Image 1 (cartoon, one colour):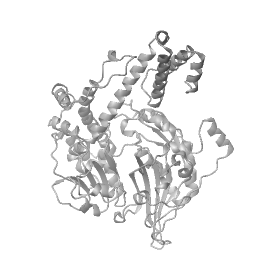
Image 2 (cartoon, rainbow, N blue to C red; image 1 turned 180 degrees about the vertical axis):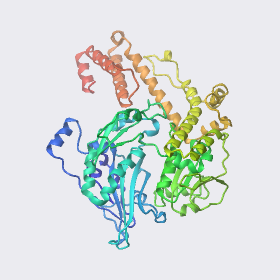
Image 3 (cartoon, helix red, strand yellow; image 1 turned 180 degrees about the horizontal axis):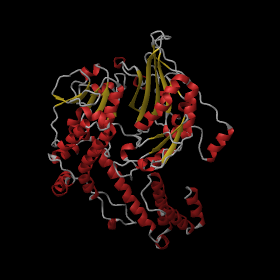
Length: 595
């Protein structure tokens, strides 16, 4: 296992870097990669931009790892420059299971939980950018993503005749397509040129602009320039604005990415598109789901496609694109002493066919047939043979129109990208039809603006009452936007019990609470506070200053959605009030913190 210089030197590694989770992995070896020195001119340029060494790198990646398999030493672990630690997921997750037989180059993704009790120091700008991202692309502070490029080729110079190594990018950012593209650019060359090449690639990443949502970014990496745009929460769902920006030819652009996070949806759903709507329901309701696949690339692609199918709704339960028996959550997720948890697992080890046979919903890619009710699918033209094993009865009637549309595309040999666009639009419209009635009802829980008084605490949101919501569906339900018939009310009742509803409602409640705080702050700023202090005592005035200072801190900390100029107006009010107080009180309030 090799940790690149940024893993040691970057801000992302301070406190508890991922290398502290990299340890005793059976048969895996590690070596260190030192960070190159900056020349003075480049260092001066960084200081001019307010950046430290590896700040640019840490905005995109936490660290870079190299995982190798030592056939001669067997169970030998060597970690440089830091000593080994007792637990690890990364080493095992970075290699396909031995039964996978992945010859050549393989790419896949995994996701793992951050060690409990640890906090990772992240690039400070990331938190600012997070507020502008769609909810499904926001960082989850409890998880890292690992993006893997694995190579296994015959090599007669080695004892057992095979070269096996993985290049792994560890990041908090769920930009699957983007990081897989980065690996395609650097991994093949790295396997030929080794550490100096990887060192140079890390330096390129360190010079990238910050991952600002909504901006078109040009990212050079080892002689190639990638053009990307990270979506914002203000984008219309289902659109790719960068496609409109690429009509003008850019001679220096080598790779244009229309998306940073989406997977090939149709390729994953093609073998079971007859059941795609049922799978959408299972994901929406947070049902336990396991994908058994012959390789980590197929398991991770399928899991990510499932999570993506309810977009723009975020999947709030845990999901593991590639899960192994060595994972620290293995016992937690495979126990039979309680019902399977709300999680989507992607597995490749045949051991799971027995261990997880009690799970209620299984997608099988391959030939083994676990016991249970089978929904056999037609393989179509996709490369995968997939079966769904479940006794679940969908709430909604199957939409035959989308099936005919996709079947026609298969017959006409329509490109997979075009089929994915059709399927993604279908899922988007289905999810929006489902969520709009909820959005409409939740908006009605917001107090009227006229009830907000600057001299009282902001009013509270009304309580979400399930039965009250159900009554709204008769006149304002999904039938207004969807042609699909079925037991929508039954689907809503089940959804209200799911982790996805819990996560969605907590997010919406937080947003609306912040809106109330912003409106309260704006109401305060519109008051004549100098007139107010003339009618009140010094003690009450000092109390007001302290409350206004807290409001100011809250507005900056939580990025409250206030009108432009409101924060500056509040600062001016605070300064004006302080200057109206006696000098001794002015000194005390100024010492308590600058405004």
